[in-house]
Length: 423
Ligand code: FHN
Image (cartoon, rainbow, N blue to C red):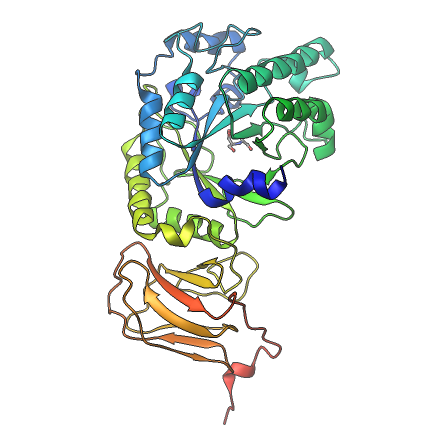
């Protein structure tokens, strides 16, 4: 299977939902609580018997993801705290042996598959319960036990749940932050680990966080283009350091902001993985639900602009390092068609600049209504007229522009040429 074949569904999907759920969800102070409050492992482990999410919670996550227009999901099967949401022969510290005594990974995988969503599993390499992670030289046996646990558990995840579409490692960095990426890969024996994964799941997509590059780059809290490979930008809906349920979460992004990130990811030819942190009972809080529903409603009208889109070099909005902004919003593309996703409605006339490719037809994506336009081959200006004064879609209105060829950005050899003659 070539890289392109393997990445086909991922490339079409553009949008996924991440779920952070574990013992930390009971505390409501984010998934790093055990470490940031230095709670001793035995004390923290008492939470395991209180872990009792409501039956059907995994279905609720899946239904929400589906309604949001996501095409795949990724669940934290075991975060840095070490508590597994699956059955493991090398650890009793699991949701199967404690509290609810249920295999949450199984419930999630079954529900996602039944809903037609691709199935992703997150697995943290580091486990805070092992002194050998923090001080490998001082506690070599503990480090060996940690590596053995990883191999057993990753094998279990790759064997017991049918086809797994994407494996997202995390926690690959060394505790003292002294190593480079190849040092992490050596620490985790990632070469061998990933070879095992590929043997068990030949079609799987693996992320870059074991220290080995593998299939996708996964920047956090920013939307960025991949340097070598496809990119999946992952992000929280609320505060940046609160992936797991955080009761007091003051900085919710608006639906508009989330949608802008999604469109920007699509313009760059990558995916957007948006996180939810269910509450102690496994339910999704209203702040997250409302925003996901708004994104889903928008996607149900404008799906064509996002799904299976290709990267587009026409001027986008607010890309870091780009001086040239298109303040109205970014463009996505499919072949010769550009989709201008307008977040800041300009009124009756919309002007896009630096368009080098001749324009054939312009219309509203949702209604199909044709729009009058002019395109100037010399200065690359596209002026669309006949627009309503108010934005037809309060989130973002998409204008479909059919070009004669793949739309290209016009080079500006003289940055001042547009000014004309000054008196
Ligand atoms: O430390 C984690 C964090 O808790 C969260 O899981 C995110 C999700 O990508 N990853 C980490 C740091 O890179």
